[in-house]
Image (cartoon, rainbow, N blue to C red; front, side, top):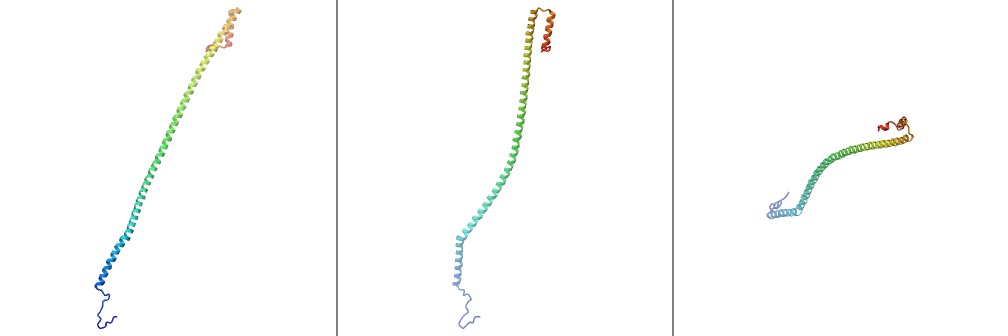
Length: 180
C-alpha cells in the first residue's frame, strides 16, 4: 500500500506521458523497419532457397515420372519386339525347313533321273555289246562255215557228209546264236 503524504499527488503507475508514447511508437517503427530489413536480407533468401529446392524436387519428380513412363513404354515395345522376333525366327526356321525339304526332294529327283539315265545308258551299252557279240558270233560262224566249205571242197565230200558237218557245227555253236 502506498501512503500519500501531503503535497504529493497521486502519480501514475507507468507514468504515461507523450514522450513515452512517442518513444514507443518510434520503437515499434524501428522494430518494423528492422523486421522488413531482416526479412529482405535473411528471410527472402531463405524463402528463395526453399522455393528453388521445392521447384528442383518437383522437376525431379516430374522427370522421374516421365522416365518411368518411358521405361514402361520401352519395356512394352521390347516385349512386342521380342514376340515379333520369336515369330520371325519361327518363320525363318519354317522357311529354311521348307527350302531344305524342297532341296532334298530336288536332289532326290535329280539322283533318280541320273540313275535312270545310267540304267538306260547301261541298257543301251548292253544292247550294243549284245549286238557286237552277235555280230562277232555271226562272223565266227561265217568263218567256220567258210572253213567248212573249204574242207568240204578239199575233201570232195558228198552232200550227206556236208549236211552232217553243218549240223555238227550248229550243235557246237548252239541253236540260240542264230536267234539273236
